Length: 321
Image (cartoon, rainbow, N blue to C red):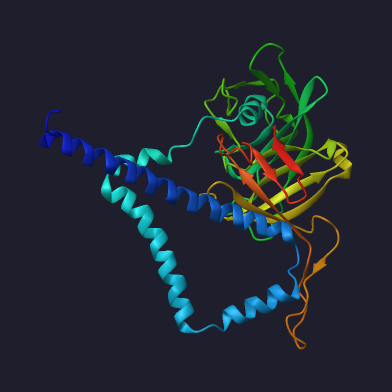
């Protein structure tokens, strides 16, 4: 046999380095995903047992050595992710998402003109367009301008008819209810993400990523309309029957939208009854609150949480339409 050449050894080392890079990148990604899955899983367990709480109290009073161990472990995880890039930055492609799942693709293709729209001419307002019969109806508010006199109240117009031309992307609006023209034709974009008007104004749909109209698994005639209120706070119209008269509005708040693979959304006063935690000590007060936390996903390749959904611990799913 021919002796091994220097080039052969270089190729062998290169192959080994590639394998190490892939292993490190995989470990780093698994760490991120497991962290998110653990966070979601913890919500399913409800109230913790007394033993678990005792364990938490013991952990909180642990020695500084334990804290150093925790920090050391965290640093090790960070080092794994960093080393994958230091060895070869080109290996960052290992973090690219996979192909869309069948359910995510179906959810995305089913999205229509329905949704929450923002109008650049009225940045403090919103427009909600929802299918109704052969056409649609719109709820419109221009909000309260920032320079409006103190005490100015927001005006909201409901059940405004919108005509839809069958087989086309044309929607016809009547703005006479607020002194505007009738028969204004807007063109829905091919990707169904905006409506453009003759004067060049364009309404953008679901501008805040989570904005939208959602159908609910356990209420086939119901819906949820989520839109931004202020900062990370949201306002949601909850309707279980499909009749607008049965709607109630609740406040909520969302976590970081950069979270992977989901972002936590909390809805307050949703269930109508409070859940109280057990007291941690005799003099402590139990914490009682009515809130529901779901996981919002826009990851098309996520095999657990499909695109355009909010999933709750009881397996209820809201799917954006």
